[in-house]
Amino acid sequence: MTITRWDPFRSAVGSQNRVNFLLRVLNEGQKADAAASFVPAVDIYEDAQKVVLKLEVPGVDEKNLDIRVENRTLTVKGERKFEAEEKEQNFHRIERRYGSFFRAFTLPTTVDTDSVQANYNAGVLKLELTKKPEAQPRQIKINADSEKKVEAGEKVEEPELAGAR
Image (cartoon, rainbow, N blue to C red; front, side, top):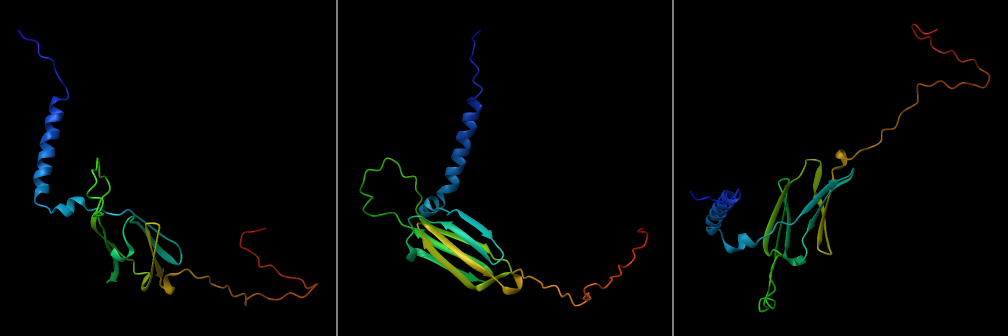
């Protein structure tokens, strides 16, 4: 009788190899650009007057960015190009993503799509969308016309509350 050592991870490694094979087969049909493209991270926040989007697009030239608003949809397209002179270097590792990207955001009805401002600084694209005037908070003034003015020394009658003594 032969004793065989049991390896609890043998089946896990086999499963991982099968999943990797399936992913490779699925990716073969895609273009090489799609595998290398990236999706820039975005922060979205709002205050009483505007909605702000900040996209991280370091290394993307300002002229390679395309920003459009159409039918309450804000789209940002761009491309980060691989430097041609660096291709000749003997790279050990390339972890930064290159290629084109596309982001689309549905805008709320409270945003004025005619007043979009874009600023690009230090690899961050900042888009400010002003809210419509009717969507911005406004303070309502309280009219005090119903109060009676009391002269000095005049006695004021307080209304009697039911059940209060």
